[in-house]
Image (cartoon, rainbow, N blue to C red):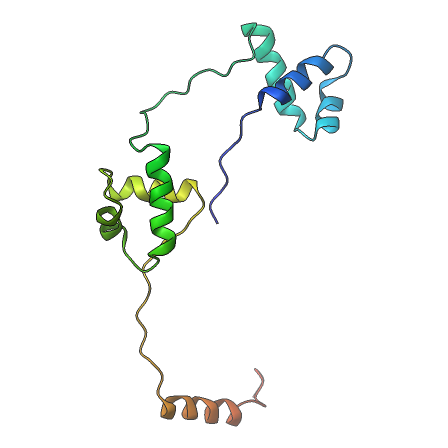
Length: 143
């Protein structure tokens, strides 16, 4: 299963940490708020050095798809489960590559793979399989 993306502290949590930091230790704040104490400690050191509780902008290329397009992709994937990503790209009508669509699915913890084609079992196959299982049901590894 894909790992969940990390969450940033909400403004509410930042305020709660900042308010308690004057009279409680970092570890105790973490226990009280159910936040890892390392997160509390890192937030307070950043607060002291930068004099601001705002998060710094992350480096990297901006996302090609919008939030609305992301929701459209997810809805299309959930309704068209047997469609490959290349065809899904045409269904959604988004100017994004299949890798971008795959990355979006990964972020939302959705897995998509090709269905393996298997031969169908006929009645004669199931009867033979059952006969074999009944014949060898008493066998152990020692036999």
